[in-house]
Image 1: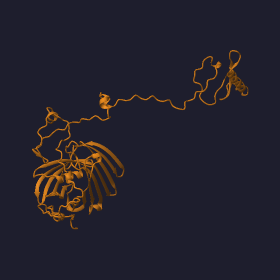
Image 2 (image 1 turned 60 degrees about the vertical axis):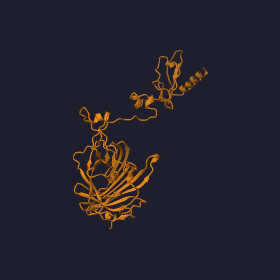
Image 3 (image 1 turned 180 degrees about the horizontal axis):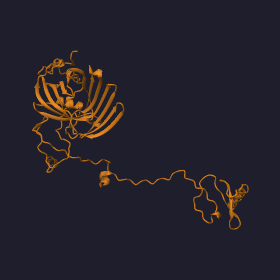
Image 4 (image 1 turned 30 degrees about the vertical axis):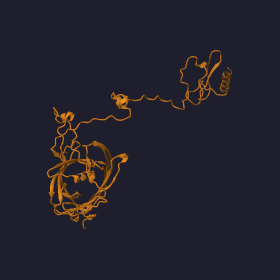
Length: 431
């Protein structure tokens, strides 16, 4: 009661010392008087200088009630209610949580099963090829209806060739185009290391190529590739390829990182720098046991095919999928023989020839219409070293040929230059 009287007295003093406008209203922050209420006393209402006014509706006896305090916003926002947990993929599919989310593992996915084609009794160096498939695979291989689905090809798995990759072995070639010097090319087996976390051993391979001669006056092209393959099967694990080209008033750079995830899945990170920078990340599915460029060369070198025997493998060059078909031609005669081959104790008749084709295909193994099919010929030494003495392939306007000019044997190898047990060392062609 005393507190209310004090408020009224203070309001009266303020009202007495403030001028009143003709309309009976005052400026913001000043007191105003209205018609007297019951009892002959005037009701006084104060207007605050700051803060919003009370939002309560005004009733008939609002003048007789004391003024409410202005409403202020809270300093902190009220806590929002937590959303209810959403169902994961297993629960959305109707799978119990105890089955699908025990270890947060993804459920396996099932794609289209491949068709099992028929092969000869001996194909790609494999004898005793199993008979026709049975069960689900057999019904798909010979369906009772017209099957128009495109399926991934199933080819015999390449024979393991990791034991042919011996660290320290190095090859150097002179590249000619239609008989004119064009550049150099190198390939080397760097080292063998144990895999991470108890995985099988890994072998590191490296390749290099560069233009020279008359071609370098027009453009300079440098190509580097590094590959890591399994030391047993020879299957690639990771590949890094770098291409630099200068000339024609514009420089170009390309970098491709490829990771082979197994079961035909690859992850490609392609980065290009030219007039503008572009970057692309791809996850693609390819035929199982697809090799990279260096692994394809090692696989061809390791082939031991009889005359007329065939072998097939798929290779990935950057983002281009290739199908390599090789046929054995038997012992051959190479003329002229590179000088390095003579230094290694090889005669013109001590070579074995392989011939084949390189076809650009899609991920289902079907040839792409309109793409040229390139021919390939390889001459290997007919001894335990299996040295690629010469390689030849046709391109758009002529034939590219690689002739061996230098060969370094594996590290710590006591084999001879002639391959028959006599001591030997690094051999190179005379300049």
